[in-house]
Amino acid sequence: MMNSSCDNIYMVLSSSEKVAIGTICLLIAPLSLMVNALVLFVIVCSRNLRRQPSYLFMGSLALADTIACCCFTINFLNFHLFNEDFYFQRAEFLLKLGGVSTAFTGSVGSLLVMAVDRYHAIYKAGTYKVLLTVKKTLVCILALWIMAALISFLPLMGWSCEDSPSCSNLFPYVDRSYLAFFASLVLVVLFLILLAYGLIVWWAHKHEANMCAEHPGLARIRVDVHLAKTFACIMLILLVCWLPVLSFMMTDVVTTELSKPQKRAFAFCSVLCLLNSGINPLLYSLRCRELRAALKSLLNVLGKCMGCRLPRPGCSK
Image 1 (cartoon, helix red, strand yellow):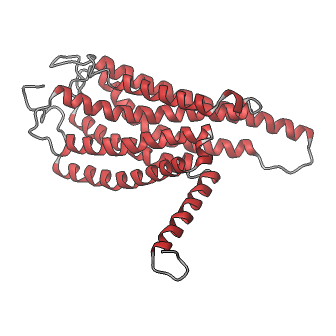
Image 2 (cartoon, one colour):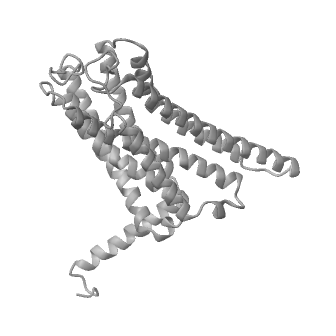
Image 3 (cartoon, rainbow, N blue to C red):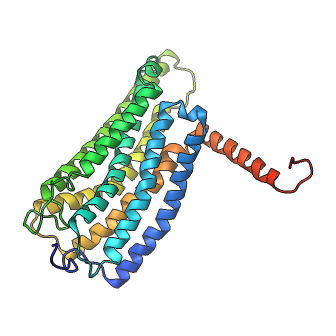
């Protein structure tokens, strides 16, 4: 792979497909970057939000998705659109791939700790604030990012291959055993997220059943039904964005060769991961009333500051 052009191995997109995939990325990436950066900025600037573990986890998710929008878009487009005659350098490619993998692993990992955090906040509401302090939250986030980086840079640290049958058909220098490990790990994380949200819905349903038994004539809003609909939407989007990519990875692991149509489909499915990074702040952060209030307050302060810079009567010079 190092001594020959990878055009016929990995460069499978036609000219029209390159235009299409480039257009999709350039439409999604700026919007995703802007929304995630906005969420991260609000959390950093709000002292009240920084004191709450749930919003620190949201900040970790926004940071991961912000990095993913930048790293994925730049490296993905460079790989598929501008490197037709490029000779891949092992260390440089694996370094870039590790950066992209770290961002997406940090994103999925943040979704998991957020799901576990919500479970503990509901299931153990009485001891939640004692069990999860801001200091413990920061240590958890740091450990999450260290693990994400270690897992993602394993190919650069030696778990890779040269020109051998064990090499992936989707990524240069990536060993299929590592690809199986990475895809299996993400699948386990997705299952744990599904399990955590399932337990939350089950607890809410049990609570609602007890309340209905105690007050049979009282009209109530079914919180369990509302949670079930919300979490079903969250999991549907998460699975739609990640399962196609993971399916192609596992197919690459168990088969000797992938056809060019399969590789083309994988390239387009990879953009779904970028789309997921843009949807995450809409599902998890901007739906929170407290964060929206902090955003509104911050915008009011910025508006007043900008207004006082103009030469208006009553504004101090």
